[in-house]
Image 1 (cartoon, rainbow, N blue to C red):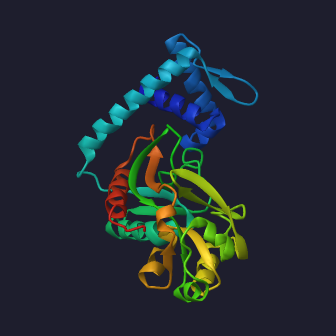
Image 2: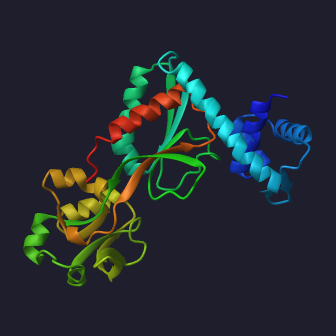
Image 3: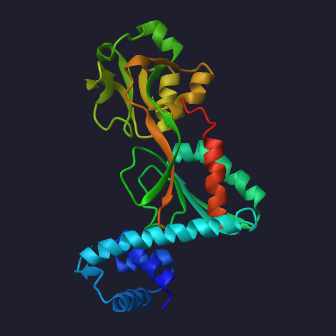
Length: 298
């Protein structure tokens, strides 16, 4: 029995949530995964998992062994990384995910540069406005704009974005500049469903988070339509700063109520903690971190 392979299989079963999902992400058959787990349990002389018809649960021994496996696999990954760094040329398929607009605007150019530099690498770019499960969907690297709770992911912060309110100069001249969050009750607002599923915007006043109801002149499920509505002078809009940073720079939009913004949201590059990084993934992670840290998302 290959102990390292068995440890990797065991960790993947736990993180994927089932033997079938683990087989898919390991690109092997379900019987192979079942046999590997059985051999590992027989070798250790303990039961690592309790299996029911719907899900699996770690035994006490399994929980202890899981932590040791993660430590060992991480150490092996680090040792291999030191040996191959700068020696092996990246090859194979790279899979990357990010939200649609962020991916299109900031991640795609990095991917394109990377592919030009390493012609033996191909890439799948999944830019969607939903939370992608990196392990279940076989993704190498993700960029998340959020505070992360998943301890199975390694996260590197590359920046932060703000939740900003903005409008065109034309609109502000005609309707006035709001001086406090309550002022927006008297304004027309452009509502983007992704950021405001309910008709309210969130602010921070005297260290307290406050919700203010808004009157929407137009509601959009598409970010470009919502931004264009603000540029056209229809009303105030609330967006994540990266969505309108270029429009602010070009003078199409102006930020207001900046001192009442909620806490910034981190932009983080993530990958599974148990994943042994290939040369291509390690090279892409390093390049992505370096380039994104120099991007002004505000």
